[in-house]
Image (cartoon, rainbow, N blue to C red; front, side, top):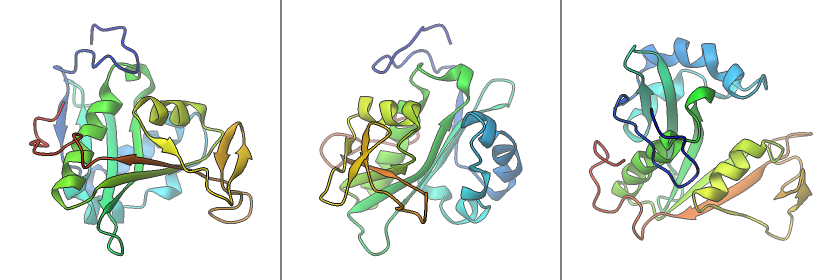
Length: 188
């Protein structure tokens, strides 16, 4: 990639190959995931079942050498089909700020909209400044509802996922523009 990139710069993604993940991709993803999260232990948050059952709304991207460059795992809520969730998104640290995360999200949005979702939700640890800033740059808004409080500088919910597991909830409307009428195989 030749672009220095930035939150709004799509960079040059021509050397990357996007495809649907399969269960066979699980070992290579979990081998790098903790490193990609700066050493935070998140491996347990991605059991193989995510790749076995949500491949139709998820993407993996590889470099020309076949090495993993990024992935997104998303799904549509069964209880609220208007809501799509992004369970996890990541780009290899040396490929960040070049449009890869945006390209992964555009594909996921197109898949979610194609299944009837009108909004996307992403839940994250509020101290993960990289993820918080990335989602804000993509137009997500933080849920600052009545039970939220400022944690690590971001409105978040204390103990959202259990004792000590604080989370910020980010929401973005996706039915107007993002993904509508787009072929996810070409959405870049």
